[in-house]
Image 1 (cartoon, rainbow, N blue to C red):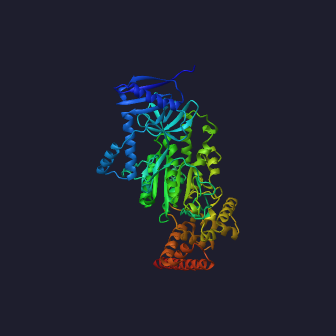
Image 2 (cartoon, helix red, strand yellow):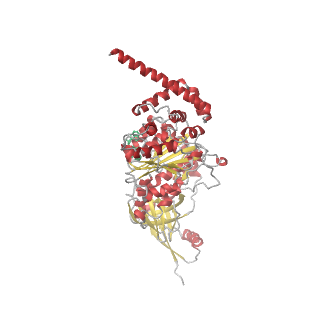
Image 3 (cartoon, helix red, strand yellow):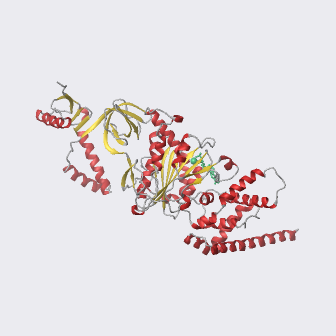
Length: 597
Ligand code: ATP
Ligand code: MG
C-alpha cells in the first residue's frame, strides 16, 4: 500500500472542528487525486486567526493575515481602476468591498529559500514557476524567476535582500514581471521598476506591461521610411538613421558616445518623437548631469529617463533596458514614434554575467554565459517600425557599447554589431585630435537608413563619403612630400574644409535645411578658399544669413524635402551673395587698417 498523503494544518487559537477538517480533506482529495490523506494539526499564533493548510508544496490560506492581504490587493486594484485616491471615495469603496468581500479559496505554490545573496535567491519546493514570473517573499520583497531547474528555481530580487534568509517562505504569484506604463511617465525619471525617483510624486499609470514581450513578427512590420534625424552633420549625411532602425554607437570610454545620443534626443524637439534614455550601471552623478542637460534644452518635456546606476543591484541593472522597452512599446502601439537609448549594453552584459554566475550557470567565452547573445537580440528585436494597419508606430534604438582599446572584435561588441542595422564607430585618436564628434568614416555604416533619408539630403550629401575617403588616403601619402601639384593641393584643401565642417559642438543640432545648405555650398567648392581655422565661424555666419535673409529657401527645403536643380542654384546664388558681402567687408577692413598706418 502506498503511503498516505500528509498535510499540515496550522490554526491561530481555535482548532478546527471535525466537520471543517472533513471539508478540507475533500478539497485536498480533489486536488491531489487521492483518498488517503492525513492531516496533522498544529497551533501557530503568528497567522493571526483562521488557519493555513499546507500539503506538498501547495498552501491554502484561510488565515486572517491571508484575508487581509487579499483584501488589500482587491482595494489596490479598485483604486487603480478608478484612478482615484481621494479619502472619501476610498472609504466608501472600502466599506462596499468589505461587505461584499468573499475570500477566494485558491491554492498557492509555496517554497522555501535555500540560499540568498547578492540579489539572488534559490528556492526549493516551487516546481511549476514559469520564466519571468513574479515570486513574492514573506517580507513583501518581490523577485523574478530567472532560472528554472528540476529541483529548485533561481530568482533575482527587485529589492533589498536583508529580510530574506534561509527558510523564508516564497510564494508564486502567477503574474509575469512587468512595469506600469502611461502618458504620465513623460517628463519623469524612474527606476528600473518604473517607480518615480525625481521627487515629483506618484505617476498615474494607464496600464501594465510585461518587461519581456515577444518582438513584432515580420508581417507586423514595414521597412523604415522616415528619417530619425540626429542633427549631427557627420551622421545624418553619411550614416542616416530611419525610424524603427537599430544603430549601435560604439567606441572606447570617453569618446563622446553618450553625447551623440543626448544630442539626438535634443534634436527631436518638435518632431513628435518620445525619447527614452535608459542608464545602465552609470554613475549617479553622470545620470544627474544628463538629466540636467535634457532639462536645460527643454528635451525633458518629451523624454523619460529610466535609471539604474552602478550602485543598484545587478538584477535592477539587468531589467532596466527591458523596462525602458516596455514603456517604449506602450507608445509604439499607439502609433507614436519612440527613440530609445541604452547606455550602455556593455555594462548590461556585465550585470547579466554577475547574475548568471550567481545562478551557477556555467561561464562561456570571456566568462559570459552562453545566452548573452540572445539576451541582447531579444531586446533589440523589439525595436521596429510597425505596419500601417497596426498604427505605423516605431521604436528606434541607439544601443551603446564601450570597447577596450578600440577592439571591436571582442565578444559583446561583435554580438551587438551583428544584431543591429549598423554602427557609428567613435575613435579615441580622432577625439583627441579635436575631431568631435569622433566618427570614424571608414568603419561606420548604416544599413537601412538611406531608404529613409530625405531626397534633399541624399542629393546634397552626394559623394561626401567617397571624398573623405580619398582625402584620408591622399593625406597619408602626401604627409612627407613638399612639392605637390595644384590638383592635389586643391583636393587636400577641400578635404581639410570638409573635416572642419564635420566638427560640431555639443547641444548644437543642425536642422535638415541647414545641413543641406552647408553641403551644397561645400560641394560646389564655395568654401575651399576659406582658411581652415575660419571655417566654423563662416559656417555659423552663413547659416544665420540664410535663416534670417532667405527663410523662403529654408522653408521650401523643409516642406518639400527635395532639392531641385533650381533650388540648388538659388542656394548657390545666395552663397555667392554672402561671399561677396564678406569679401567686401574684409577689403574695407584691410583698407582701413592700411589707412590707419
Ligand atoms: P563614457 O565612456 O565615460 O561613458 P562617453 O563615450 O559616453 O564616455 P561622453 O561622456 O559623451 O563620452 O563625452 C566625453 C567628454 O567629451 C565629455 O566631457 C563631453 O563634454 C566631451 N564631448 C563629447 N562630444 C563632444 C563634442 N562634439 N564637442 C566637444 N566636446 C565633446
Ligand atoms: Mg557615456
